[in-house]
Amino acid sequence: KKEQRWIVGFALETHDIHNRAMEKLRKKRCDLIVINQPAAIGASVTQVEIADANGVILGSWTDSKKGIARRLYDIIAERFLANP
Image (cartoon, rainbow, N blue to C red; front, side):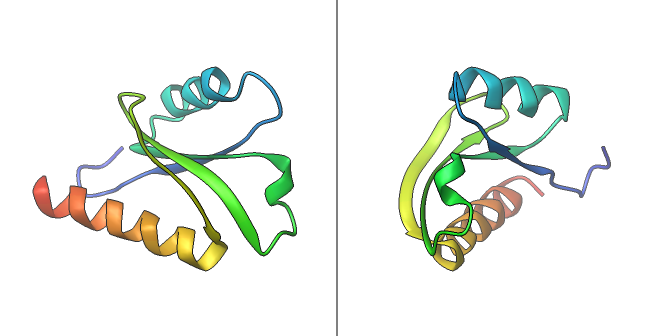
């Protein structure tokens, strides 16, 4: 992974959600992972959790997919500016 690149993974899980998402985060060397469930497919509103590379859940949100994207953007921007 290059210094100025951020990798965000997405984990669509049906069981053992957090453990499987953290496994995916480590395997793919992600900076963040968005955890959601199959109900998100085709839905206008979804519920997600976002975790950092240490496995810390940064938050849980229910919002439109556009709203979730804005939150994800804000998290990335805040972390990037704090640690360029």
